[in-house]
Image (cartoon, rainbow, N blue to C red; front, side, top):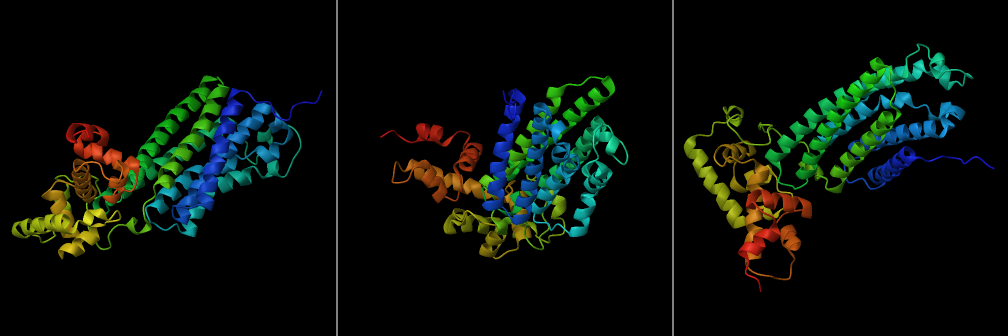
Length: 387
């Protein structure tokens, strides 16, 4: 009887599923890039490495790792996961990745690959660590990898948070929702890495080995990377929204608060001028219905009222207590409510939402509930007479 090529148990099947989904998402990122090229490639590289990690563990479970150790031993690639996620966050925020700093971030992976050179040259037999230039145990390698990745993810979380805060002040595109979800996923990834590192340390110093622990780690890393990719691929920001307004000094927090006063301390806008500008902004939004433009930016509103982006942002933050994103979407929600109250027409609720400046059903539902306190359907049931 022939030995089956691959024996599948629960863990193998789970990891094969994540690999399959990962390959599909990688193909979307590369072949149908809705993001800019650099963040797409960084994410595709990250997911590719996570898929390879899962294949590594499948090879161990099936026994093929012992037959083809050179093919499956991809440990140096693990040290690229953190830099790739950071590169994704950095380039997503509109910042350029330069070759020399990128090479420095890849240095741990390069050094570890050099350390494993004898192994890759195909020295026969024995423990793999015997063929390292400097022998390092498996748990130590994985522990260092998790710690390094956690540090990069923490820095990426700060970059994404600052990027989202600036977008909330300068654009009203609903794609900001995807950046908010990405921020939450990044925080989840960070917490998972910290918890996993704790479990790894327990196995290192406790003398116990929990095989399933490693499998859960590999599969979960891949799933989170896939969700992060999908969150920004499904509703990407237009490229003109990335990078903020040129020459504008804005608060980086997503919400307007008293802290924003320090950001505008030198704006030169007095109380009388602020009051007049506030009225002009309201009139422009009401009469010209600028909010119908889904890609409306702070600079567009400033040009329409004959002011500067910094002064307009100051009025929105200090007089209305709103960032630009919430200010514009408040008008969009009122537009939808007005049209829904007029009774059924040719357009569906989603059609009216898209016609009012929203860009997707999910962002519309979330923003409508935030401003109206209930879902669109619930609001209609309460305010629109049944026909």
